[in-house]
Length: 154
Image 1 (cartoon, one colour):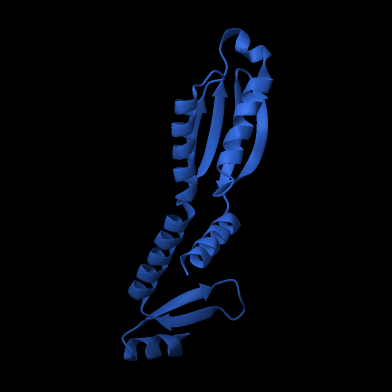
Image 2 (tube, rainbow, N blue to C red):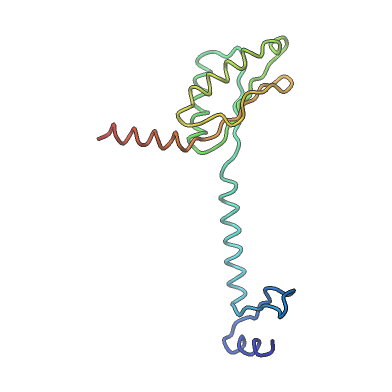
């Protein structure tokens, strides 16, 4: 151990204990400030990559008009193209909750319209007065769309 300290001082570096429980203890000669900086940069980068996928939510009603349906579905398609997961919620009021087939029909229409950019991650389920479905971006569909655009452009 004293020899390692002497070598570290000569090189103007730090002696860092890597594994204290090992026999003999494992140490490394390095610039500790640089090591700390690089590890914080790696941690920062991994946090950035981990939080890039977020969950967006779009709310529909069972008696939605065609224009509103098209607008909301276009927004869902935009979210999926951006790489976000989308939670589709059908909100039932009053007696509408006794007709869950209306909500399921809307969710199926949404899934059908956005199948070029997304796929169903969680199938429709009823929780209380809301019916939800989760869509996630489909990388394979995105690749197929790029391939067809490339062939049609030639």
